[in-house]
Image (cartoon, rainbow, N blue to C red; front, side, top):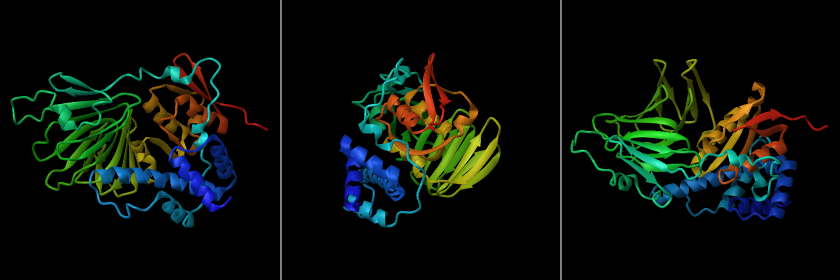
Length: 369
């Protein structure tokens, strides 16, 4: 297949305009040609970076070469394609109809999808953020919650995001926060004093406005992340807090120890056993959720299932611990149904899923001979 045809197929996929026949063609190509598979995965990342750049452009950010087409970037990246990566799982299946389980749909376990994002005030006032109000600024929403008469009060608010939702907001200092599903952010209406402090449960991506005289501190599940102005992701579900630095520099205080992170590094802290791990990572993989996707490379099935749990709200149980340690590489869109994603994993691996009571059991199926 010519390079032109390959880039046209990838372009159609990125634009959600890929027909079922073309999807089959592209799927066969990336399954049989490692170089095509590498190009495809690289272009997915370029497309995601374009969406981030577009969002930044809308906010008035400076972008280099804004008129460069995605196809030109595909050609450029094709010439510089690096070593092959692991086989991606079912990326193209979004245009197919999965087999429906004989008993129940996995989607039947998903909690009430009608739950709204909530903004709670310290005095008990509450405001539901519906789809029609998600485009309004935080300041506009806060205007509907009465202020106290004490000008020296920080007036703490709590933003609660349920399963299947996410939102981005601007804080009083113009810092921007993307809040993932199944997360909470506690923050003051106005930052007073010489420290900007917020509290996170769940996952958030932060772009902190620089202010050297007023550090920004995120308290997350037993760890304190201190920054001056930077971009980073924090995942603080259960006992584990994972800080991934995209740009700038952060200090993480955990277990009475201080760790510095440089861009491209990640620090994981487990408050239960007090274990700390620092490693170099591809930060794109840990921020892909901001643009509405699950992107993973050499990720354990346990970590992938945790992502699905946080988004869909469905509980999973592994039949054996070693299954959770299996590693995968791939990409899914959050608009895909849970049935479809589990079907993709099940038809491309020897991992099976079945509903037991009100949870999904994960088990290993026999390998085909």
